[in-house]
Length: 99
Image 1 (tube, rainbow, N blue to C red):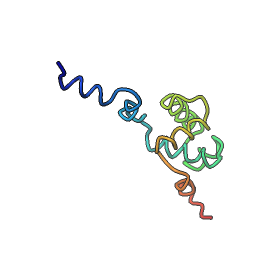
Image 2: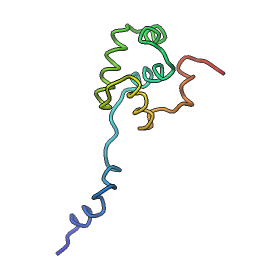
Image 3: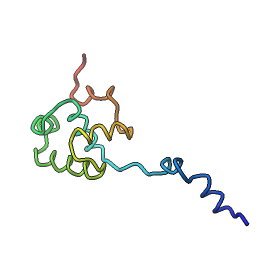
């Protein structure tokens, strides 16, 4: 006998299951910092641009790397972009640069 639970399970099992995975939560400030890192800024550059302490930048980056399960700043930028937090078209807006 088939019930609705079995039917629903059959619909989502396999590769379709990844569609239901919740996106990691990153704050707006963390996204802003990742955009600066994507621009090639050092920790000191990010701190000066955003008017925060270097230690605060480092803490945000460590938290993001843990949330996204990556080991490097570059990995965090790539993963955040893959997950749709920002795109390359948004980067120059962080520091107000116009090409």
